[in-house]
Length: 300
Image (cartoon, rainbow, N blue to C red; front, side, top):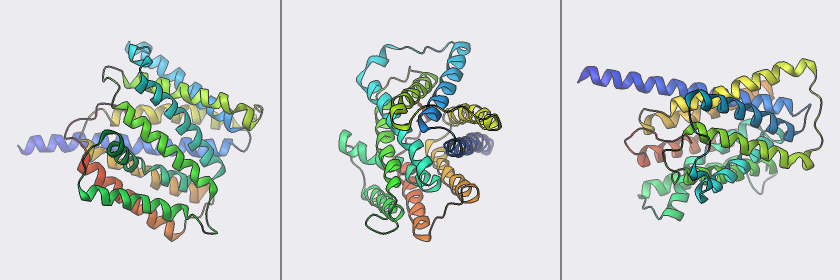
């Protein structure tokens, strides 16, 4: 029995490390996107990221013999998921470019809270009082970060909040897509949605710009860390207990805070930090109380 417990712990540690590494890669991608926005429009950045992801996951699907076209792609849940992916990605990239990377990342951590709230509204799931308290606590944390009605209110903080609504919709519809649809397929179409979002943004953000030679390393790093982030996320979500693995997604907030303060000289006040803490605690409690005792079946 002790040997089984030891192996179980080792397996979970492996998935936890994959999750931590994935969140670090996502933070690097966000930081590079914010830096590149100084020399090119957001639409160009979105298209670059989308193309990189599509090419990578097309190659992965080709070598692993995964289908990219399923009958389910014509279903309403997948169509809703596609547009949720499109709007959530575009809104988040715009938020980190014009707003604070740290604050945007903090607000994005409310996804479990809005997923739980959405499952109550749309699927009539019954939840205990503790879950309701955690949902309200997480929402209160958002209010502390955004500070509506005060002189410290940041209008760009609304964008990641809108992005969360769409991401929650994506997660809720993902549960209605058959498990036979490969996560590789979902990633491919997710990047396709991002590219389409970039194309739609071209009239808003202007013409493409030539990439200076000294900025080429950033494009290479973007092409490296973006696929790596998604690939390690797949590895992290292919096994282990969801209640143990998922809370480590919140490490992305810590990485974003460090990068935002050190490299972009962003300031995060004590009230916002307290709001971040409320979001993390409420999210972890919700995941722990609502998570099924089985392996994760889909990429979120």
